[in-house]
Image (cartoon, rainbow, N blue to C red; front, side, top):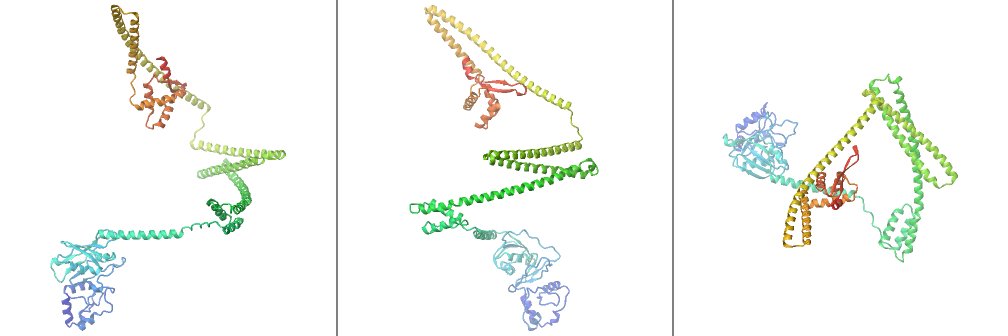
Length: 623
């Protein structure tokens, strides 16, 4: 292309042939490029923007003088224009290089799609490269977008290019969609359509993270500096004790405005141990100066109390005025609800008036209660203050107190009457809305009778259940007694036979009666041992050490409750020791040991209650 340009420069061509006007400059430039001619200058629309062209360049002058026309698209002249603003339609132009030419895409086609931009992206993916494109050609094409730090070319028709700055990536994305042709060759391997897109690179992301961390450090440093600037200053250090400082402090203690600061210094000195025999008199005078401020503080307190009393009085007067106005408002609402005026209001107006009246009555009652509380507090204070006065003054105070109490009772009576009226009105409204009448006394008595009957039925059912349980227990005890009786009878028979055989042997062998008695004692002991074995067989033994521990705790608890305790009370006590234990487990354990614990029923009807008692001492006596 450069040779063609040189040939064109050496031929004497009339400038009027090159400066003809065209209606479509893009098509004209494309045609000139296909002919191998460089678009030097056109009288129509300028192909390249003024920002790209060299200022003050006259193409006709170069043709007349025989100088090779300067191509404004060479690398040194800033080939790629900056990305245009979004509101102006983009008009892409032909871009020439030494080794290749790039033709813009069809402006009617939509812009090429790109992926989401990674943070800190400095690397682009370039696809659609010609097969014969070398790394030098790629660098020549894309170095016009900015400084290239690395090019990673694949064996296929794509590569990755990493730039020095992030804004250079936008310039490279601008070239997406261009058709690239190497030289003037028309071979398929020398042309291709470029596709430029954002690429993810670990180096870019690492640099972006480092930059973000640096910005975060700067932000933290800035905030710290701001906090240090806004932090209040530290309190001044307290000076050390000296006679000169003590004299100055004594003067400050006499001044009311500097007393709080001076008393802090005095306290610090005393805590440090600055008081000794030499400075004791000086410290005593300073303590005496501090004591002189007590009277001033009491006078200030009295003044503030007087201000508080005046504020209370003004508040009470204002509250009384507000309550009076509330009374008037409630009177207006009550007058509006009478039939003479009530019939003329619409349904919505009646509803609103009723809501307003209820709200006003609630506020009125709340304010009246507050006022009554203030008066009660005043009466209590008056009674406390006047308890130590003379008798005549007491009589007067009693009269005034009685009058105040009478007035307070009157106010309370009025407030109660207003509340009663409000409740009556609410009841009437409920009756009107729901259309229900009050139940008569007969229905009330019937309901009460039904409730009593239900309670008695429940009590009888509970008694019946308890009787059934007792019956079942008695049956089981009877069956056990029968089994014991049959067992003892069989044992007696066996022992009688053994006794007879033993007597016969004794007679044969000539033993005396003492040996016979010993045999009888042995038989009785054997019977008792058999009974104990049978009872141990019947009652299952303890399964674990936990059950033995539970029995000991339950026995101690029931021993200190001689009248027994129900299972819920016992379970609540045991749950404090072990939260996983259940009431059913405790009850089953108590039922397994009838000689240690027994169950009794107390109460009648609805008050029927089952209680467990500790009976081990009685069981020992019976045994």
